[in-house]
Amino acid sequence: MHELAIAASLVESVAASAQAAGAARVTRVFLKLGALSGVSKEALLFCYDVATRDTLLEGSQLVIEDVPVTIYCEHCRAEAILSGIQGLRCPRCGQLSARLLHGKELEIAGIEIDVIEETEGER
Image 1 (cartoon, helix red, strand yellow):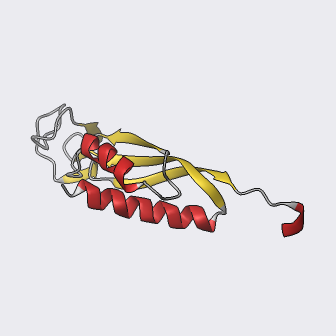
Image 2: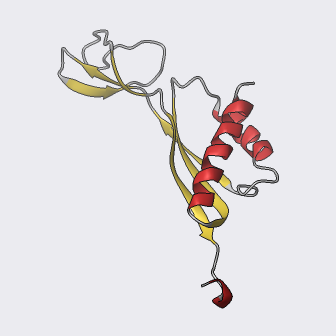
């Protein structure tokens, strides 16, 4: 299950960014996950909970935005969202398209944090 390694890497990256921003803890992580990324959403959600234990992210929510496969059809000169991942054919004209615009994403879109409050003595 490579999702555990992905979740661990995600936690490491987010924790480093959150610490640099002075976070007390991370409350939510926003992720874009493409249909062609090769990552199982359900497995990643499960592994995320395991990977966040004893970290700045423990108890945080992983919010995943599913990114559909989008192609550019040279024949129609338009973008098209595909209903499945089986074939890269334009749903309008049926032509094959080699120009994949979206669908392979696995990227952190943002994080939500609680910031450490400075006390009077720390200023």
